[in-house]
Length: 293
Image 1 (cartoon, rainbow, N blue to C red):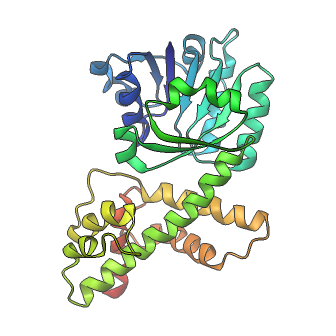
Image 2: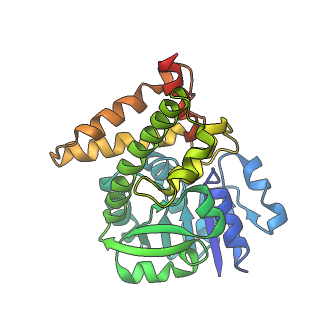
């Protein structure tokens, strides 16, 4: 089977490397070709356009920054659906975006006889590298099953959350928790350091207790040592997701004062100069260290 993939960012690149290791023929496209060329040693083919990917691959995965970019890549000039006789049967969209956009994409794909499943993921770069992503799927079960050869090498679990858009709704809930948690971790690490605690010991001391979490164990040591590389997730992406969650809450009239405050903090980060939006999320600690200073 030929599997296509579009979007080779922090998450997409390790995901493609996992796919290439399965023995499938893999063809990719990325706006900046130099990232795609990094995969040459993995036996991955590089397409010149998204349409070329649609013409060669039975299954396609997308991992892009937003639903706005997904729409451009899928339905814009030279996009996936510009191919006159696409070979693709099903598309799994790993990107995080708006619920209504996912529903619209599924409807438009169905008009071409192609399955579209919104399949945003959780677990970050470590899980992408190890094939342990958690997939929240929105769409028909038959379409999710059809995407099995794409999902299997990448994920520890795929859960159908409902019809089109349900995967994105679940991811937005996930990101509401994660966005708040990252700010609390950064705030607490900065507070502990100011109080004279050896913060390098803090993640280990809290391990196994009610305050423990994967983000604490992954990003806590980075915050403690100011070792923010390699980037495991950009602050700008977290800010985008916090905005999605805030608008989601407003759409349904949910009482979400914490989420409102979280979104405002992320929205104001670029104004101070440190951290920068392109920094790893562990650099959020600089926000609180700057405020204390």
